[in-house]
Image (cartoon, rainbow, N blue to C red; front, side, top):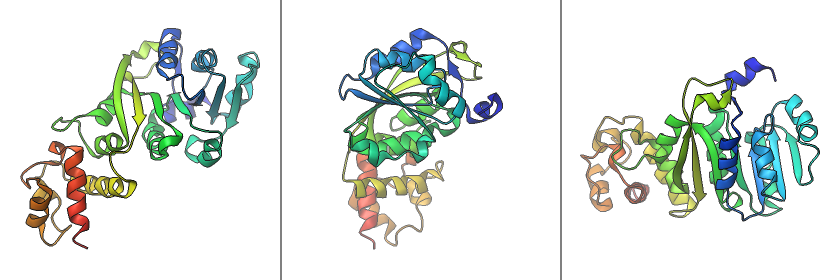
Length: 259
């Protein structure tokens, strides 16, 4: 993969060892296995290998996948897979037990990669990942926050999140035009998967009209609109960004009852 393609993917090499050390230190000691996406030249990989007996890296660039082991001195415990993290066989990984995830994610594919790992549930109990700061803020935005959206609802229904620290463009090569942030996501389930899926589907519909009141944003979804709001204990005058996770779950449950 040439430099141009990496830039199109939003891939920037981390060159600040202190940042790499801080990311590695934020990964829980258990389970003793870490999956790293996009190791590149191995700045983070080196720190992970110092803390964990097994590090499995997934690298899309054949040149970096081939040279990583040699670059790091052929360390014991390192496994390198050439491929796309979005196509990775998660079931095969799960056979070895749970894995934590650590990564400096390519900007353009960070969100779908995070979603994929969070939906895998107990297979990936903790994710410590670097993303664009604006993406981090959207994922973690609380009810009532202007950045809250469907992504916020989805991530927070699947994980407890924390913004650990921000990272200057100067820490990368080439430097991106935006500030990055490292977030820690601890997988959980606020409700059964089917209920979570329904709540997220409803939230996506509502947030497609985020400036409208719920009664207008969700018009046509259910016949007895007022009754749905009443049974859920949610005011139709609220806007999508105002709802808590519990309210989304309750509202989705009443809509399901409409058949």
